[in-house]
Image 1 (cartoon, rainbow, N blue to C red):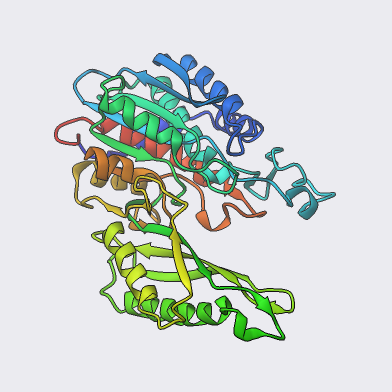
Image 2 (cartoon, rainbow, N blue to C red):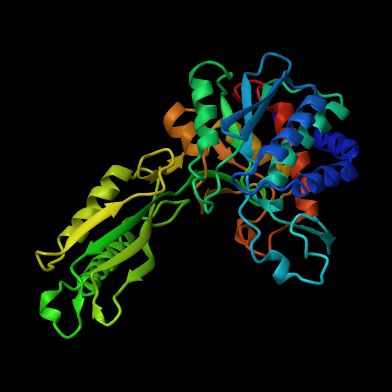
Length: 420
């Protein structure tokens, strides 16, 4: 069934905007930098319980770091819809200094300034999580029972940047529970990464590679006793730039664009000596349809083809494994799936300027569902990824409120007919 005007009017009339802002303010005010997700997870467990969700569970995926999930029963004839997102945020280093003496000084204060709420995690992605809870609450207020069972799963460890974390440990646990039958297998998933209420049906893949070039150090006065790692690294860099140019010549993906390679760090050298070791770090973007194994093989072949001193050794390390040992796989679902069409229609019914089908300019955890489990998943939530992870993180309040109404409309119709 399509989204009708009467449904949108009913939902808008039933929305408690003050309660929605209060929930988001409390979410931002509960710090959850990667590794410290427990307090926020417990807060969400309380919210799920208040919704009437069954089997609300707070369970560690790592010591002291829990996921939270719960199942809100629908009418019983619409399958299961997963609403998911990560509880952790990036760090707040530099925030207080940047905004000292202003309303924004506290990164967890969540002030509303000129129609925007500020704070760490407000966009990435606490507004998305709060949107799911408020959408379910809105349906209840409007007297609407969704056709589908709603599986809420809020997980930790998605963000990178903190030592010993950021490997999707929380989502790995959720996937294992689905595979084991502990958690109902969903028919479709909405992952609430920020999209400005557009619908992301594809996303890039990535790998991070640390290349260590090792020679032999020697005092500068007798350079013939050394093997210059920096000189070899210069040749390696040239090969990497050429490899990126080759990747960029490939046909671009309609939603995600072209693959490329970006060198991000160069470290090395010696003090008044022949440099004995250099390290080059890079990130490589893949597009849907490309293989991480193939990408690694091509990358290493390009580097090993470089003519260097036979005494030079070159080692490769891939420190950012996600749903693959080398990194994160790209993913894509059909944009004309009934659930995707319904989601875009629901958004457009509230915000005609949003609801476009696009590709994610980031990597998040939908590939665990799409590539590993065969469960279609799309990203959709309020928030602008361009200001996330920065000292400018904020969200437009009206976009958040519109997102609640749009998601509630989607939930009210998902599972009818062939939507699931």
